[in-house]
Image (tube, rainbow, N blue to C red; front, top):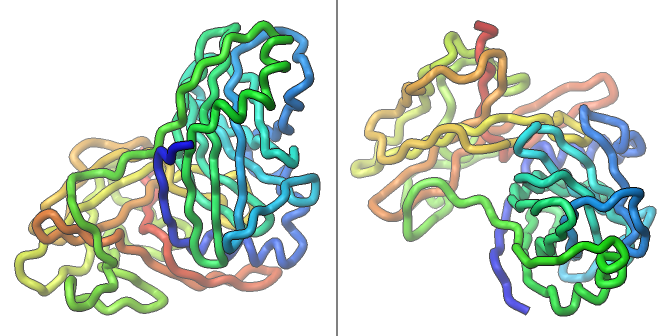
Length: 336
């Protein structure tokens, strides 16, 4: 068994808001909220009406080092997005072994995020579904979380997993192959990364509202995303006074997250620039009209970079309130 990739992520405010809604009992409506299709996990022993291509694998959940047994009342949702259509399906995993077998059209897909009870996290793992009549093992996905962080790893355990799928694949006449899902590459080049809250390195003080630089333009409340003046806006942030530091900036599409709460999260990377000397970035080409984007800034000193800047907010709802930090900045492009 070999580890392919591992990530550790800080749970942000959207996760905390989702947890707040869950505490109010609204998580019951999870399966019907959002513009997505809900698909239960198909039993590995069942045979579909017609042969298709498949992606299969297993998922494992751990909380504070203890394995979580999956089931109807402890289900895991994986959100799978078609790169061709942009549509997102909720894949419901309730099998105690964590197995999944998805009948999908050939093409490129990405596992956007996971949701379990009140825990929600971005994954962005890409995989390719082969031609019809073929099946691909995309790996064993291990997700470990606490109240504040989550980690994930993709492992190749095909020799063991094959036992769970061999009979079903044979009954469908599918020829299996192994091609593990791939982690999203970190933008830019660097050798070392240090927290943006490391005052001795970057000279910044972090608080609940901001970690890192503060967004200045486009102006507006963080929720909803402020409206930019043009399709190619100028992004600006508070400058850092320490000598010798430059800025990296990244812009991602903001997509609907199929869960309770604010329903937004980072999608695919759209723009990236590094080594900027001024505390601003002019988007070089028009973006899509009337679309939401998320962006952030990190600091750079040679081949050492900081973590990305984040912001926080306070929001009042009819049924309560929520506040949090750890969110990227955002903006919405004009209609035209």
